[in-house]
Image 1 (cartoon, helix red, strand yellow):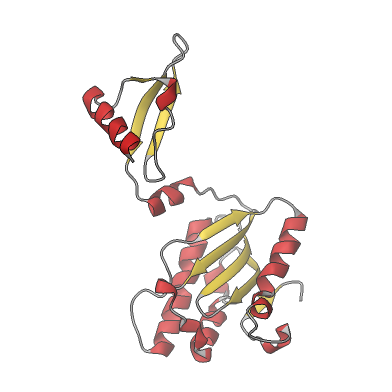
Image 2: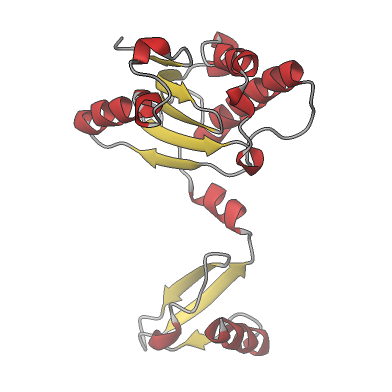
Length: 202
């Protein structure tokens, strides 16, 4: 933290456009987004610009969406409240996972809705983007569940975790991991006993 404060004092003095020695290139934190360029004449690194985005904003800027790409998305309920322990609320949210309007051009290959979180295995469709897809399904499922629960306000956490899968083996292994969540949690003895999941292969 002290190194970061030193870095910012130097930046203010130089008005953000001065040479930085090689040893100071990594004086950033997850909340600072910096761009550098290397000078071909002396090999020094020059600070081009810097923003003080919050962690969530920085994560959103780093995300890239690609048509046909498959992602594993994990998201949690607000304050990890077990909203979906209520079967009626879980059923209302689950219906959104098969609603064509919510899915758009993208496809949910597998998903599971747990009491306080959800896993989605999705393939982006043409013209769609990962943040847009996540927002659509979060908003729709949140509204539907809130209506059943007689509450208002945020149901999902703002942040979520996503991972782009690279090969068919990863897709199959991830799908198995997702749909087996209720079994690992000890909620049921067989998947047939748990209603809030689906996979295109089954």
